[in-house]
Length: 112
Image (cartoon, rainbow, N blue to C red; front, side, top):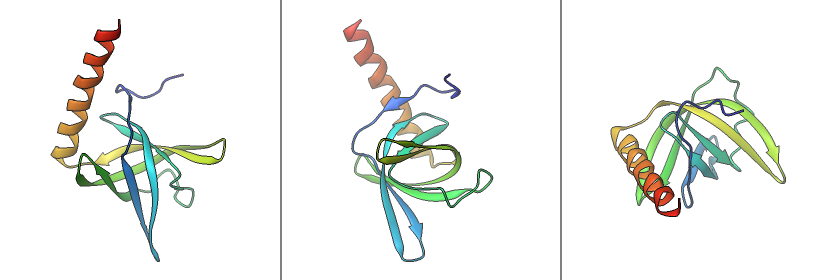
């Protein structure tokens, strides 16, 4: 059952860098919404659901610093998939998400 309050938008080409002691781990975003993200290939398993994780998302030719709180994890075929709530994001991130929502709605209306 869908538990997210905001509409999910499937995305392609958004990379996520998760800082760690020896550098970064890289993953990708599967989908985004105003309130959260779904990450693929970036294990957050070391963090509990109360912790906040700082990540850098590369999208639209820009880099965004987001504060995420992991909410769930599951193994999907060969990849770890993590759902996380956005705790803090710059206004430019929200503007991009709202633009993606409009584009997604326009694409849907053209096909229905």
